[in-house]
Image: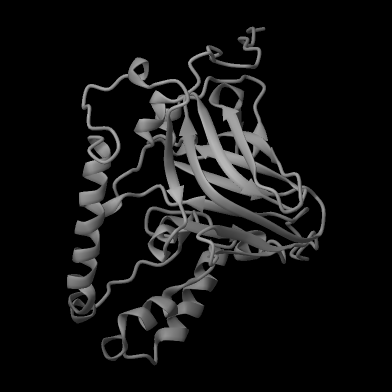
Length: 310
């Protein structure tokens, strides 16, 4: 509570001399931006896009909201239209009664491409430096070839705050919110058996993470992961990974009890680098999608067991 009070007081001192009614909305948002850091979440916080909460409960003036509301509503309406079309498979799947048995062998659905700037609105980057826990940096941007580059520098230098014990991670992750902050689900993935990624890297090993949180906060760390080993060099590689091979993790830790991954419950996908090798990295991605292999009947590649009561 002392930490929360100190941050709140410093914020009040920072904006006490500012007339919020006389500044643009974007500049006002920049003033409100505080790193999540180590502040515990509360239900009075403002949700931070990179996870956690920023400990502020600010009443934005009405004239500031009215200034940008038409533009925001237009953008949200466009997103809502797109999501309705995807929800009822009107874009790529005209059959509303589609089932997995209707999906043809080797049929592929491309979920993410990087042909224009709008495709990057669904992605965000993160690193230990964003949480004041390290010095790693990363970026995610479009190339002239219509692909995406995930690159940066992985640093294992530990912040001397008396709490952080290790550092060194960078990641990209899709935003799991649809228009009007509705929860996003990859419902069409339930018709396919494999995740498909076309990429070329630097020889380092990345980790693909499929996030599937539910409503309860104890499930917000639920993910299924699988390594992505890049070859290095100029040649593209097609990684076709069965969903049955993704292992259950919580907060990045592999769980003893493995659970089957239901791909239509996934809400976002991320790619993380944390291979304990300090230095620059670079991963180029052409597309991310799903494909179907009718010969693949495996549901879970790992042994499951129930922990006996003693």
